[in-house]
Image (cartoon, rainbow, N blue to C red; front, side, top):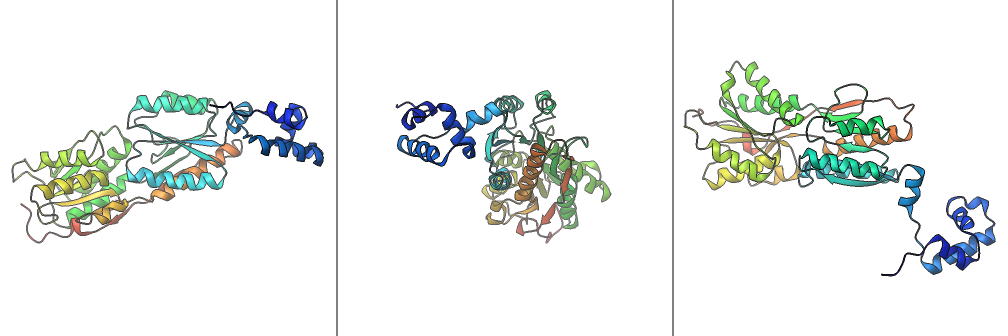
Length: 344
């Protein structure tokens, strides 16, 4: 493999000093037009490409931001990333996307790497509680915006959705449709968004005057289609008088898995079991039975978080931290239409 063309090579071809080439690249007004033309011709002839990464590292910052998410395979995070990228690109920045698989060890490793790269800032959906490494990053001057997670205090920017209200909306809808035994499928509860959705679901059950046992909590180890199928396998084996007639899933991938498993076992949705998901990803409306879902403004979440990060990175002294909370919206489709008969 041929060695990369260096500034020294350009200087030798143009018959000037390395410093003159540097000025042409960074401070062209300091160089005469004749010399600029000669250096530019040498750059074109040699195919020189400047090392922007090294230049910005020497200056102590870069033109990149880090985006750390729980699962890039989840379309929710894909849409959020599009919002981040659109905003970053308009500001002349690139995005480094990191996937933690909901593991704190991977999260810490990526945070260390991003700090080494001197990124201008980091957008992150934490896998668990706020880690010591994340706290240290901020203390050392790297802006950090929490994404899809509300900040605990007012000293940090965050962009989130009111997940308690989202959980309440989903279960209130199922209760209004006549269901009295509802399963909540999601986990682990160490993920704040999942815990908040469950709190909202419990609030709806309590407000309806039903006992806590009316909400059957089925914990999952992940938030994918396979986990949704496994959860439903457990639910359909329950005694008929205790089995739920509806399922509220903590995200749409779980709901799609639940729908697949119920269909495979010959259950009719929603006649035998109603389903409500969360996020309202594009696949929800395209499912074999279109899924009801709690909609989050995914693209807007990413866009707003990136705007806050860029504001803080560009003007740390004058920046005012904000905690932006969006309202969720219930989208009702065929998977949770009103019961046509009394629940089992």
